[in-house]
Image (cartoon, rainbow, N blue to C red; front, side, top):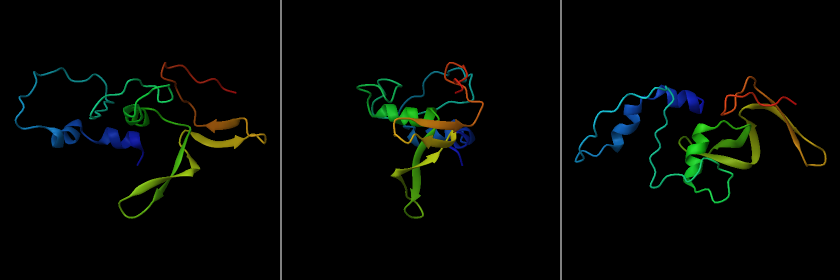
Length: 128
């Protein structure tokens, strides 16, 4: 199951119920979110940016970014046993990219991707 399908399938209450503290008063009622895609991420401290490649970005940035952004490729998933999954950092598998070709001199990579893909600002990525 893909990450987005999984997150959409889970009701927010099911995710938040184990985190509820019974001794704490409930907050005043809030209006329902206007979007169907809501990510609730509970961490000790929050991210200092949403740019995971930025200089000085904190570790929680990865927790947000990896759940919000689709990537061209990702590290290959390796099943260690019935419960545990890890990643092989020496192998890649496609996410948005259907295929890719590394230049013979190793200085560039050409990706062939699933279209249409929209960027965060709703613009289409440049086709090359």
